[in-house]
Image 1 (cartoon, rainbow, N blue to C red):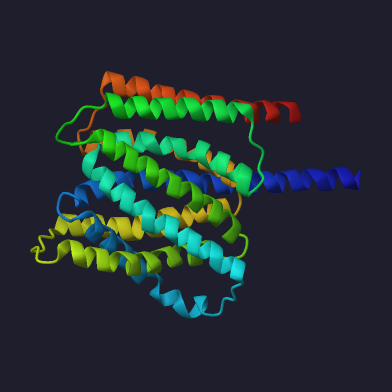
Image 2 (cartoon, helix red, strand yellow; image 1 turned 45 degrees about the vertical axis):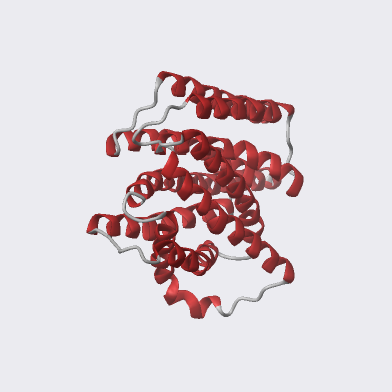
Length: 312
């Protein structure tokens, strides 16, 4: 009888931890969705590299107080390897691709492309983390890719999207980087706090984007409005500090493949925010292509739901 009670207690504790992780993920997804709106607004004033440098610099200032605490950490060669991978893929490559993408496509379409990240993470996790990969995930991935291609080919140029095909492709490249970021965080979160991992990304991002921003803005007069500065502060403090902190905390509690499923909420939040703040509206063709992407995602998740029913 004692053995049965202990198992129940463990199950209740595990469920409570999962609920906390879900709350962290929901906050992170809403915050990240708003980053498309904020970055789109900033890119109307600053170049992409300058915008990223400003964002990373503001975020880094938030972590200066913790540097002494971070200096006491000990690192293995494997830790350093994963930290280098983490920062190389995100923020460095990820934000280069995403900043350029948002100059060419709408925030709504970019948000739709992000819905492919869960499937890409599941495939990568099957090789790196040895997590189970079903046939339905493969089929769902193929369907989601087809939907993304349709979305990009069917998109038309507008004042919000000068070259949506190239912009969506660059956003897809950002998702590839985001996939390997999620894999790296899954390992590092077992040894380091979410605060430290988020700070490392901010510090490395500042150093990485400084020369690029200097090169981009050389000889160009700075025309930074208070509104743009406000969006930069929002990106640096709320999105970088809050969003990544929440996501890193969630990955310390939930499997990478399960946590990445919540990325599907980003396009939903992004479309709503883009409609209210930027006046962007998806066309009928773009809506149909988006449904194909979501269809692939739903198919990829069916085995997991059935597995839970069998366990119950």
